[in-house]
Amino acid sequence: MAASFDPVREDLFTFGLWTVGNPGRDPFGDAVRPVQDPNHLVRKLAEIGAYGVNLHDNDLVPFGASASEQARIVGEFKKTLADTGMKVPMATTNLFTHPVFKDGAFTSNDPKVRAFALQKTMRAMDLGAELGAKIFVFWGGREGCEADACRDPRTAWQRMRESMDFLCGYAKDQDYGMRFALEAKPNEPRGDLYLPTTGHMLHFISTLEHHEMVGVNPEVAHEVMAGLSFAHNVAQAMACDKLFHIDLNGQKIGRYDQDLRFGSEDQKGAFLLVRLLEGTLGGKRYEGPRHFDAHAYRSEDEAGVWEFAKGCMRTYKILHARAKAFDQDAEVRQLIAEQKDAALDPLLAGGFSRQKADALKAASIDVDAAAKRGLGYERLDQLLVEHLLGVRS
Ligand code: DIG
Ligand code: MN
Ligand code: MN
Image (tube, rainbow, N blue to C red):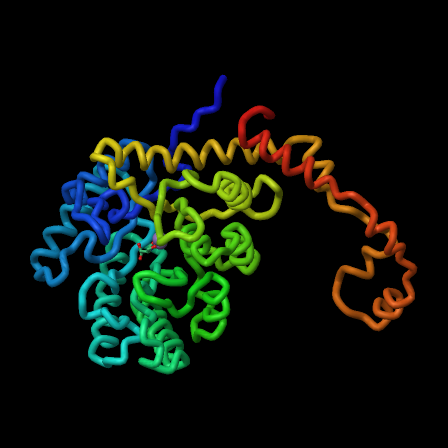
């Protein structure tokens, strides 16, 4: 029986309201699609097999809405979630659209703006908690600069640290049980963004007061924009148990942030990422939501948007099946089998000792033989390509 690539709730596929609700505006053109009601988006996502929906505060509650308006909107949204069984695993704050954030939010030189950013974020955390979110994402879209002389960069990082420490304190004080996931991006919309890659974020987290509740939310497009291997960055986050969330999409290298349909561009990169997340090569798999932070081409009508969303999930499942077959392939397993050396292995494991140092210094190692040995990676990569193209199973 042919494998089914139809998404099920257990796949934990999620979409942001801002993704499938994207009206297709870009810097050079107006919206091409109508703005959709969030409740309609939730019902359609449930229909196509998604597990959940994520949101910025203002994706659901318009900026400046009154308390009674917010209560009405949130009440209706919660009913839709109950009716559809859809979850809200992640929430976040829009700290980038309103002009007040034009020079940053937490890193702004204006204390009024920094105070407003904290106020807006605490309220967004309240909303996220009310909807059941246990992950809160921070993407510092305006935390950067063009005229770099505007502030000492160290001041920017200090302000980010103070804001994160304060908001971690708020989440703990409210007992929300939330974990924070920080999302990096090298540039856009600002000329240069502070904390540009996941690697920078991992170090930044280590400087925080409540670092144990803070992880990362890497996005494919953002690391590709920086010319980096997304799978390597995700692997590093997984290795230190800091992959709290992930933004999946597609991206051509050397372009602005395209947020394309997952797997629509670098299929090998997407394959290696899914292989890592699903643990088909061994090791722990990622257990969090598979979130598509992407949007349909501007050419699409609403029907095209749902084709986009189905394509994200279907491609993920196809790649998962291909990765499983690849890592079960006997020839692949033989090519990547760990090499053993009875004499040297004990010296390489378990850390330093004077004895190990003396033994390693005294070891007789045939360097020429090691240098001459062929590694078979051409065959290995050809096997990957053939699995990916579906001519080997
Ligand atoms: C953009 O990549 C950012 C915003 O869409 C949002 O704040 C975050 C959540 O996935 N990603
Ligand atoms: Mn993006
Ligand atoms: Mn994102």
